[in-house]
Every structure is written in C-alpha cells, then in structure tokens.
Length: 310
Ligand code: CP
Ligand code: NVA
Image 1 (cartoon, helix red, strand yellow):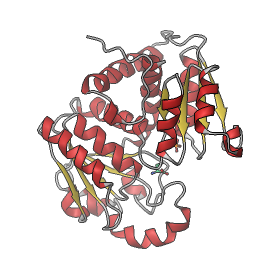
Image 2 (cartoon, rainbow, N blue to C red):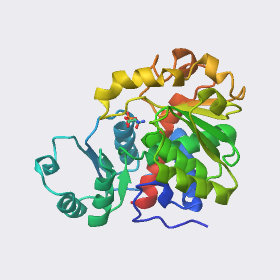
Image 3 (cartoon, rainbow, N blue to C red):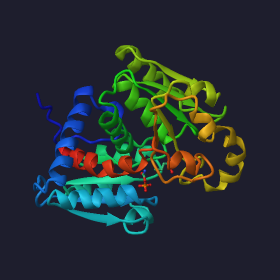
C-alpha cells in the first residue's frame, strides 16, 4: 500500500521508514522507465523548487534542476552570494519567507543544523542536498543502483573505504535500514561519528545485519559485494588536503585492494573522484564500476523524492 509522504522533509535517511525507502525506489523505477519510453510524467506542474547552494555542485544541481523541469515545475537556483542569508538574515526568517513563494526547497550547505532549522521554521518540504554531516539523496540513489544491479539489498555487504564523512554517515543510515552489512574502514582519527554508528548498529540488529568499523582496508574489503569510496578531503576541508593525503594513502581503492572483494563486486563513488588519490583509473574505469549509472540515477531518484513530498 502506498505511504503518503506529501509535505515530508528529507533531511536524513534515518527519518524514513523502510516502506518509505522502498516506495521511493518504486517511483524512481517508474519515472526512469517513463523517461526512457517518452511517456510524460508532469507530476509537479506549476510547482517551484528553490535550490540553495552554499557549496559547489555538478550532479546535485543539474539533476535537481533537470528533474523538476521534467516533472513540469521550475527550479530557482540560489548560489552562495544570492540570498540575504549571506548578509546575516536568519535561517528562520528565510524559511518563513521562502515558504510563501515556493513548493519545496533543496539545500546544500555546511551546517546540518541549518537544514533542520529550515524545516522547523518553514512550512514546505526541505530536501537535504548535502551537509557536512549527511548526504541522503546520494545514498538513496546508491541503494537504488545496487538494487538495480543486484536485484536485492538485504544481505549484501557494502564496504566503504576512506574518510568517516557525510557519505560514510548516510551509508551507515541507509544500509543498516535496509538490512545490508556495512563495513567502514578509515584511518584512526577519521572514523565516523559514534552516535551514527550506534544508531546504525541498532537498525542493523533489528534487520539481522551487521555494522563494523575497522582501520584495516584489506580485512574490511574481504568478500565485499560493493566497494565504495569518496574524496579524502571534503568541501570545506581544502586546507587539510595535503595532510590527509599522507594519512589516507593506505586506503586507496586500487586493483590490489579490490582483489579481496567478490569477483562481481560493484565499485561505487558519489563523485567527484580525485583519481590517483582515493581511487585509481583502473578501478574507476573497470567493468565492475557503476559510477556513471549511479550519477544518472540521481536524476530518477530525486524526481521520485520531489514527486512524493511536494
Ligand atoms: N555526488 C554529488 O553530490 O555530486 P556534486 O557535488 O557534483 O553535486
Ligand atoms: N564528502 C564529499 C561528498 C561530495 C559529493 C564532500 O562533502 O565534499
């Protein structure tokens, strides 16, 4: 039975029920098929999506903007210098004002609390397009991509190698919710947030799966169905990039490391990739790599999210 998600904000995968997650996948699949077969699906005719970007973006911006257009609505882009937020207008006032004009807001910013506050003070759905803490739209897309390729999520083992960052956090939320085993291998000092790990362990226990945090990438990747990595220095951490590069070199996803995964493992990366750092060209461009299908699916999954909540 369909779950009504209208009006709901998407700030963290952890706020979604398993039924809501699978409903997003169902709608994504339908919209993808309809797009391929030229069937119109103007589900958001006349609706407006505000897109606030305090950080750069290729995939998120283009997929949301094209997505709202394909659904019959329009997207308004606000860069880092465009809104009065830049000059100190509060998140609360911004949320209240924008709620009078728009049907929904997608926001990419630094502080996760700002997104929570936008939803708290606004009266329209807020979609998290990445914060320093989480990247839920990316991980919902990743799970949808794994489902397309492997036909099932429960019981698959996803191994994330690298920084315990926003991607690691949302993967912990998402994989544990759907009953996948998730292993995170990070250098010590760069492991994921402990509260998020605890919470993922609770989700996993309920679903009969496992969550492990390790510092040995080779042990972690053993028998992986999915090997995932992300940049070593995220947006906003540019000053630490050189220091991190030294500390993370052992965590590079290269041909030697992926030998320990299953033969039919999927290589995934949210992109942008820093080829030669966290991943080599050989792995990125290997037949196991699904990075461009993953990027394409951002469009289909975010259209589903918008269609369901707006
Ligand atoms: N993966 C992702 O969010 O890419 P962008 O930073 O290009 O939006
Ligand atoms: N961890 C990366 C993800 C980019 C999509 C960042 O926050 O920059």
